[in-house]
Length: 314
Image (cartoon, rainbow, N blue to C red; front, top):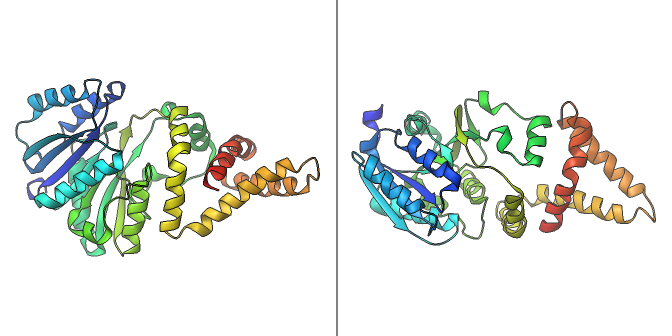
């Protein structure tokens, strides 16, 4: 199958060395095949810590045999840089575009698997294939550790190939021929631009596939800083996502519950009844979706985070 793969533009966006993670990602990228079908696009978001020199050294060492290599500077948020890659791929006439995150380890057959799924599910009007990635438990922040440990979820590791409501832009393959019907990424929606774009695609009848057969290592270490960035920028993006994609009914239910719960706490000196009712409803809902100690602990642990998110959205 490898000799049948058409030209693919592989875009890597970067802004720093990420404490050494970017170097590890580049080492894995060198193994991705087939080189003679890959046009590499490195977009430097004005890095200042030597990341550009790292890429140049990588190109000197591994750059032979590729269909082409493009290394440019561009300023803006990641959404704008993704649009630059989309438009460049469309303009130079390649059929497929792949995004690989600067902190994800990819294996040799990453592109081959995604292309083969595009071909296998061709009649289902597939616009994208995303490989599932995982973050080691020790890389997660406190809240994510609690959710991973106690919340019942489907076993993505054994899910095989499945259809999603959106897509993950971090490690994907996109059919550029279908992009004009969906449009570019919305640059006003940061952090979750792939959810917005994927939902627009599925509303137009396209299919976004996920491949859980092989999971890619995501080296990002989550921190309080990331949470703060969400509250300053992500909340407005999430609100716009709800409005654009007709998700307001579900969003309003969540916002109404947590805002109501917050104000019921303020009313406790007057009457505790609304607080106790909402507390029972929420705790019961979480208990049904949790396992082990999570039935008791997950709701109170996540309550401050949920209240803060809902107040930011509301």
